[in-house]
Picture (tube, rainbow, N blue to C red):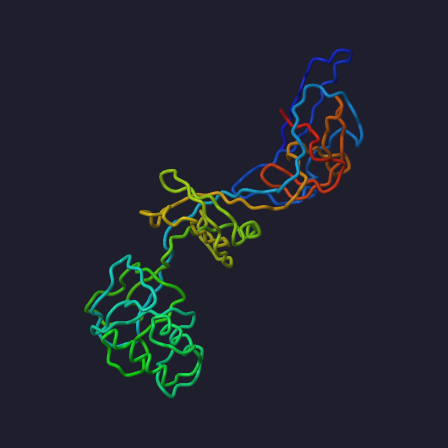
Length: 370
């Protein structure tokens, strides 16, 4: 995008009136995504400046901006939804009838009863491995045995160091656990009596009602912490790594700081025209979860700030002039004169451009449009 700016100024005492000069200025457009491109890519389309390197002319009343050194940052505006996230089905392979369900919104941690089948509890344990077999004496060693013993130890029923062997100590711990729940003390756990989940869960919905036959989907469960879910263009992944700070604007105008806590693989999302586009799923966790009290599944907006380059020498994008033959220059005010100085460019971000080569120093004043 270009714009023409004409300036007519009264001559300084003792100087002839400078000729009226048309200058072509580079203007960087700003959108939801922030530019991250090398300046040379754009050079072919910009009109050339009449200034040659080292040319000087008197400085009339011109607007200037300083050359600065610091972190080159860019800001990305985003929209998303604040809530507990999508729910997943939780059920059991036990036969029988569902006799009790926890209330919607109930938080379930290790050892909690997720629901009851034939009035006996189906219990949540924590771990990354799903349950795929019963636990009983004589079973093969495996990491699922260690995971079971770790849970029993945290709950206070197993006193040895957890390992992958189902031993008499494992059976004894199971019996104590069963007694605490009013279950028959068998020293073994049938398939479907417990479920492993990677983290505590929140009851998001009831898939069945009491009186229905138990199945693979009895409740729908989500995470226990409210998060903001957003989808970004895949090329913005480099500016939104885990740990990036984000300022979230909540319904009603309040704000809350957050942090990028997870970045997923690109997925297809519906676009406004009914087609599909690849988007990058990003999860943002609020630094203070109390800021979201009373809010669930609501739209929010935010701004993400990322450092593209540390300790960069920077000028405003609007200071750039395209040179005849290619490349770019800026006009520097030096002792009342304007000098054209060629520059080499790096990254663009937030209205600034990184200068990677040229005779510029922090503190120099470069001409910009008024």
